[in-house]
Image (cartoon, rainbow, N blue to C red):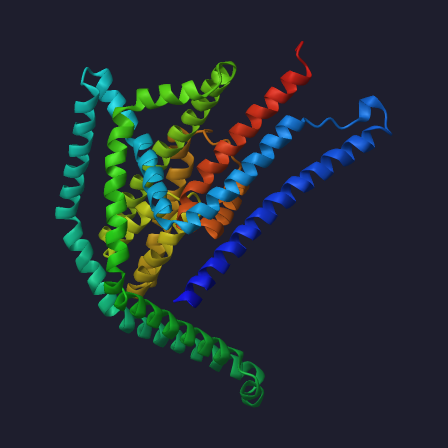
Amino acid sequence: MRDGQLIIDTVKTSSFFALATSILFTVLLFLIIYYLINIGNRHIDRDRRIHVDLKLGIKFVVCLVSLYIVVIIFKRFPILGDALWAVVLAAILAYVINPLVNFLEKKGVKRIFGLVIVYVGSIFIISLLAFIVVPKTLEEFSKLFANLPSMVSGWSDKLDSFLNNVRESISKGIGKSAASEYDPVGEVMQSFEQFLIKFSKNIVAYIETLPQKFSSIANGFIKFCLALVLTFYFVLDKDLIVSKMKQVIPPKYRKDASFLGSSINDALMDFVKGRLLMAVFVGVATGIVLLICGVNFAIVIGIITIIADIIPYIGPFIAFVPAILFAAMDSPIKALIVGVFFVLIQWAENNILAAKLIGSSTGLHPIVILLSILIGGGIFGVAGLILSVPAVSVIIILFNFFKKKLEENRNPLN
């Protein structure tokens, strides 16, 4: 028992020593850079000197150290991370439903009653969708999981037949002896078959572990319920919360903070409303087209499309792949029809809906959007894929704002 306690005390001591060393090293590094700049300024002309604001530098170091300490605390107490997750989700939900409550309030409905109407209406719509769509969706999902091994086997057989025909053509062209010595088609076929087998096994293994994930699912449900409660109070007391936040800001910065907040709010609101409406349009249109064409699992693919289309550019192709695969299993003509309609739906989304609903709210070039999605998804996973574009948009708004302020300070007469 004493040995175990000794080990714990040693670990705590070493962690504290590492933290203290990191903080001390950061402070010393800042001081060294500061004094090196001052020494260098003595040997150059006044107009070429580098001016360092010591107070600003100290504030920057304090912020870094504070951030590092916060990260350590969150790692030490995971429950704080769960609480923060609920608060962030509540803030996002409040941001989304607040315009609906404001609309009802302008129509003469008290804010609390408007909020209750939005909550009850949302529950009614979700329940209605659950009653109409969920049974069919669950049926299609169960059918998909049950038929997945045979479907993979069918794809493998079709690919095997196709590659055998290719091999025969190559053999006729270069001779059987040369083809037997080096068989690239056979290698490709073998590699693809191994991939399909591994892929199907991974899916089956994941499905088998779903019951074991019940505790994490229950934990996520509890956090979501907590987020809904927080959302209610965030929206209900929005004016009070905004007022308290303004009081925290020094008076001389309140005008700039108000302008900055309005700019960010306008950009984000246009983006959120636009992406949600476009995702619903694309998902519903895709589901209807697949139902008309008689493609299996049309409702499931439509729901996947609604979720995936929230991610710009990349999302639609995530849903396009299964649509084409299931259509191709019936006939190549059906796959071609689905592909044509997919192009038409994407054209309507990008050239008509995007211009009407989003316009230039983000002000981002498509290359910047794609890079944001790739980097955000690589670092933060699914949340990064969804939130990376609005986050980059906010960063650019902040950058342009502070750039303008610096230019005004350098040229006060202008």
